[in-house]
Length: 219
Image 1: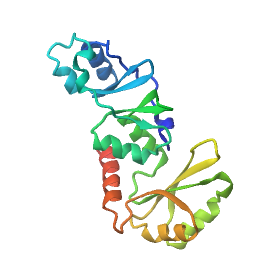
Image 2 (image 1 turned 180 degrees about the vertical axis):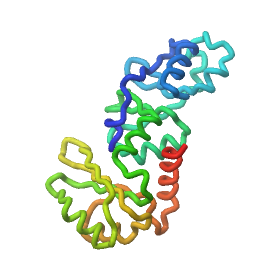
Image 3 (image 1 turned 90 degrees about the horizontal axis):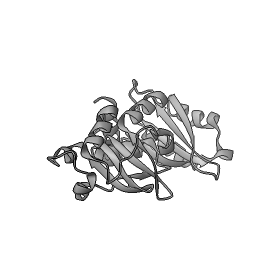
Image 4 (image 1 turned 90 degrees about the vertical axis):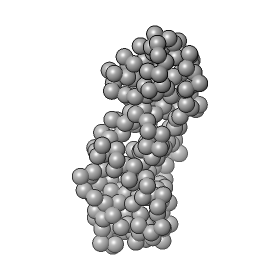
């Protein structure tokens, strides 16, 4: 699943003219600790609940603490695991998304959790592989054969369109954590592996990403 599918359009962005009281009201309504600050569909950045409370007078406008605004965002096309990693690194409850440099909406921590729960067998332990290919090269039967030849099973699979060039991403949740062998087999068959998570060989960075995902799924 990519960023575009996760955007929560009902959460309004604020502006520099929004008061702290108004911003805190929105945060309370949606149970968020962050909001996007925009001007004419251009992202200024993200403001936190803590920074607003530290204004001392929440009746002031956001522009009075503009130095606290951080430029944090992700572009369209990023997959859900990249989003989880970024939100975890910056301890965000809301992440602005840009399309062609313009603000188009935001992703919340809750929307990420719900999406992952719906597309992956999150109650089962196991690794994740994301393949990227052209639609004409897609064959689920061959993918399944490669997985099963390594004594693994596919617990869930999700296909996402990437762009207008007919490229797709296939997210596979497998039934074992150690997926090193099946990754090597996919590479031998010249599959493009966009990402893998909980890959056991020399994968401190990927393991960190998977741990970030687990923290989100089990707060």
